[in-house]
Image (tube, rainbow, N blue to C red; front, side):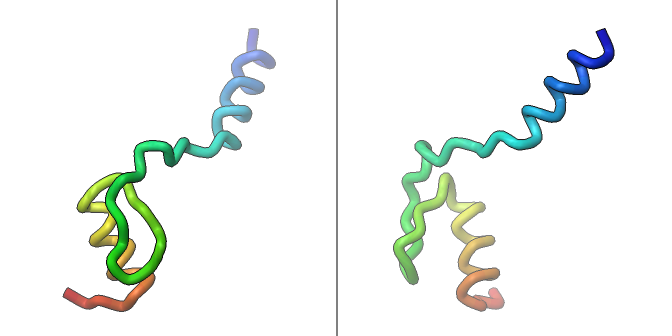
Length: 51
């Protein structure tokens, strides 16, 4: 049973998360994020807002 477990774990690492829930638009670019927390992090990292 060990090889099946390793295969399953490896396959979940390569899957990308769905972004279908992204609703919050960035006021500085065209990117949409899933929430306010993600938006604040994006703005700080991508647009240099050091608040």
